[in-house]
Image (cartoon, rainbow, N blue to C red; front, side, top):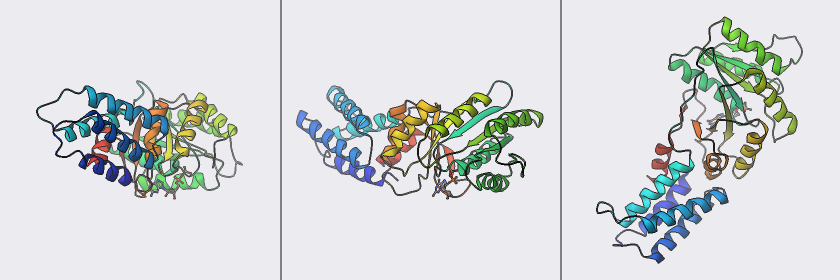
Length: 298
Ligand code: GDP
């Protein structure tokens, strides 16, 4: 992921090597190349415009620092702007002051929510928490079973409607799960909700109803980093329909261009909090904007 962007930016910086001072024309040419690199990587246009504008302005205004040559100066600016569009500082989970911390997952079907729920549970367990998973995706056949299988893999209990009781009401299941978590002294509850293939009003309403029922401490929007240009629109629809506090990027191990996913934080004003990058339960961690920017510029 991000290999195209990384390569293109490296070419751009290479052209600046050996220059003693950057002329206005050098800055313009560099800005143009950065613009193309970002667009080719699928970064959303408004984000590209803002990014390039900021780089240009800062490159012109930047004090000529004795320690850095012009190429290094531009790299430093691009690095800082990349960190900024990814949400700035690493955003950590907020835990409830009392009672269980409730984390609600929302996103399209296939985004990787169910997998992510178990990965997050394992990650929390490793931090000494006692999480519980809740199966509120009662739409997709096998979703409950899939969560149960994943829960077993990571050794985390799954709260689900009793089998044989029909489809069940996800809002009721969510409500009951909080009571169950309190009874069993789980300190984090991760609620997996249903997704659809595309954004639709009923799906949003159901997620919003579950949100109102469980009053989550964090709503996380889970998005497949490979969905390309649709990522930003989908994120905006979830922001309007359900609202969320942070973004989880999944499938970062893919080879797509990934720029659309990089645009989500900037467009929605919600930071990327976690990244999922593989099929293994341990392929998951907090997302560090600074480390991602460094990797892109490596
Ligand atoms: P849901 O419909 O949102 O619950 O999505 P699932 O959790 O069922 O995931 C959809 C598919 O994506 C499954 O085949 C997962 O194994 C796969 N998947 C999930 N996360 C990742 C990831 O980080 N990397 C890769 N390569 N595949 C993933």
